[in-house]
Amino acid sequence: MAELLFETYGVPSVAFGVDAAFSYKYNQQLGICTNDGLAISPGFTTTHVIPFVDGEPVYKGSCRTNIGGYHVTDYFKQLLSLKYPHHMTRFTWEKVEDLKMEHCYVAPDYALEAQLFQKGTKEAEDKTRCWQLPWVPPVVEEGPSEEELARRAAIKERQGQRLREMAEAKRSSRINELENELRGLAFLLKQLEQVGEEDIPSFLADTGYASKQEIESAHAKATQSLRKAKGEPKAEQVESDEKIDLSADEKFSLLSVPDNMLSAEQLKEKRRLNFLKTTTEGRQRAKQKRMEEELERERKNREDEERRLANPVLYLEELHVKYKELSEKVEQRKRLKTNGGNTNGNNLSGGVGRGERLNAAQRERMRLLTTAAFDRGKGEDTFGARDEDWQLYKLMSKDNDDDDDEHDPEEVELTRISSRLQEIDPTFIPKVESGTSQQVVEVPKFRPLTKEDFQVLLGVERFRCPEILFNPNLVGIDQAGMDEMAGVSIRRLSCDSKDVEDRLTRSILITGGSCLFPGISERLEAGIRMIRPCGSPIRVLRASDPVLDAWHGASMYASALQFPSQTFTRTDYYEKGEDWLRRYQVRYSL
Image (cartoon, rainbow, N blue to C red; front, side, top):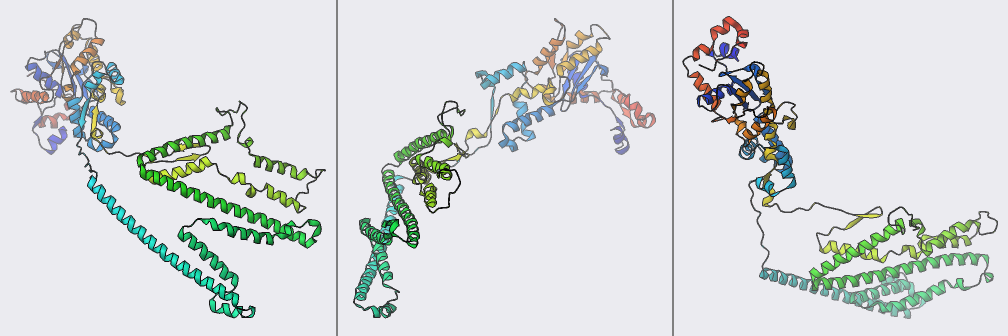
């Protein structure tokens, strides 16, 4: 710095001093401290302890640590950012500095103060401060009035009536078309009966149909479509089923003939017809079952819709209760299938597992599989060599096992209720299966922000941040605190005189911006008293203006008449060099 000032800027002379020493001398002039004492200055980035003997600083007994107000602010900013990560942009350096000077304090006993906040007592609540961030309440949308609801309902009713009228008109038009088509087909069949066999092809060529059967099929389809359009019950279907049964009996008449009365080709045809009949009957049963299930589902949907329109709230509550009961039953049944009668999963109570809980059809199939290869007396494997083996194969086939195809009615009902809840309740979250258990898919629930979401509570942070001045280990700095530094400076000067220790502790001045925390004087005095002998005189004083006293002291020093003789001139710099500057020391007592 001297090189820059002298050689670049041409400064005639310069004097160097320590801010803590200037503040101590200024407060000595004000009568706050004596000639002998300690100056403790927790500054911005460092903390100094300088002993004074006979009004002059003794630098061989001074101490320094790399901890100061900057580290307190930075630690405070880190704690707030971790506690409120969604408000990190609010924690600017200037704002955190203001919060530190306004709310932070030094605890008399850090451990007891932390326990107080950990227990959450009333005293801890009183010590907690709240910083309210800017917040604008969201605009609350008012619900529609009764008149508006009535108007919307009337509009909806008119729209529904219009749609019903359009559907009815379309249905009437469709019925008329089908009736005209039926009359035309009936007239065509009546004419066809009067036509001779040799004239039928020429007659059909003009109608667009290839055969009489095609006309009858079109007539049957039109009749069925007309019944469906009119909404008539399907009682007439019995007659057609009887006709189908009669034609089927005629088609499969060979099956009623004994095998000994048939030739080899007829036996082969009989087996083919038997397989075809079995397949046809199975398909008919499955189709009938699907139709019945569809009718039952439509009936339940109509009943549910009527109940929902009568009382929507009660209907929704009943659906939720029923869904919960059925889901618990289904889950318990699956758990039993997996673990049997044992509830702890160890299978030590004699319960059977999933592989052993077979129904009658599954047990019969298992018996057939295990005995098919050894049911001919000698144990040789000849299964599949005969045509009768294929009948056994059909019995073992899963497709012909009606018991396996049937679903659990409770599971079917649970699926129906789940889909219904998804339609009418947007907040409903169904359960999904994962292996043998069910897990709830949790989705984040959003809520509007409130005033409390924009509040920053300052609790333990108020005294935790200034504590690093006495315990730098909290921020990873392995150095001594302010009270320990005072003890080190006193021990370094104790060898010069026996009574110097008591003289130093009678006037301990703290200065600098970081000594403005409430409670720092009491905490420093308690810390020094713990390292000093019992009964030692200890008095901790605060500077009149901890922030500006260093400037006032330097101003008073520069205004003295003897100040020019204490400066380091440019001539001294060029003649004596920078090595002499290293030994330069200003005298504060002018």
